[in-house]
Image 1 (cartoon, one colour):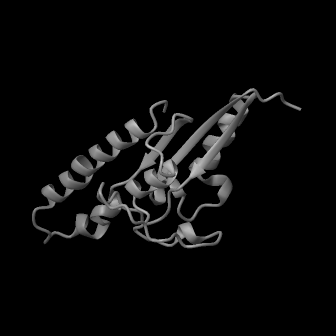
Image 2 (spheres, one colour; image 1 turned 120 degrees about the vertical axis):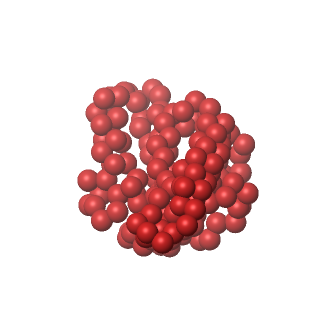
Image 3 (tube, helix red, strand yellow; image 1 turned 30 degrees about the vertical axis):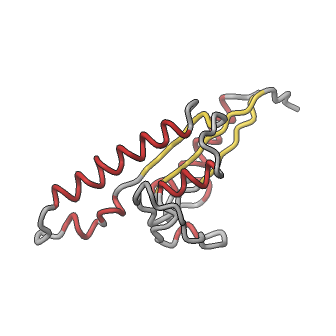
Length: 153
């Protein structure tokens, strides 16, 4: 039996990339990273919180009312915009301003804010503005929010 003397908490926020859309549990990124951390940090209690799900959007930083998540083992497979990545941060914080216990935050997002059909549609105008809005403006605000919310990550 291992003598666990410290903990190592990880948080996965995002969309289908981090959820592991269509993969078996043992193939998903959060499972692989958690297992490797447990193997590497033998005397450490490694825990993972997975809030990522298929269809998640970055959203807006002031949207504070997430729709309830679907339930069941396969709920994350169903594309659904909410909870957004900003809402996932709020859920992880559970009404606290910061959580200094989280050591690693892995995050993925942005593609659902644009939708892949928008990217490949030759008739979409102002695509450069939409890309900048999703992948620079909103993502930058999200990264800053994560940085301040989880100061030890």
